[in-house]
Length: 91
Image 1 (cartoon, rainbow, N blue to C red):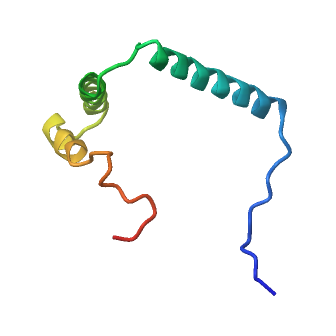
Image 2 (tube, rainbow, N blue to C red):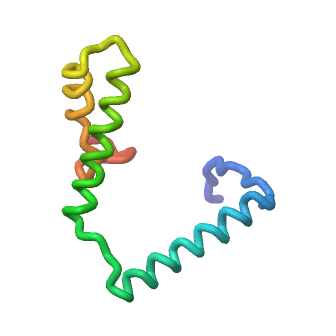
């Protein structure tokens, strides 16, 4: 007899779940259609927008907290979400 893992019990779908599912499918379809039509954003542009967003966020955080801005930059600059992350894998 094969042992089963303790699987979480899924909740019954609600109207909110259905609404989100429909929204998500629409957004995926919109993205696919935009890509087919050539409406794409270059990776370098996405990276530039993300860098600007990070800088703005760091500035807001520095203004809200007691730590100097430079110390915050050092903390956040060392984190780079990307392929190097192992998401649950032991390194």
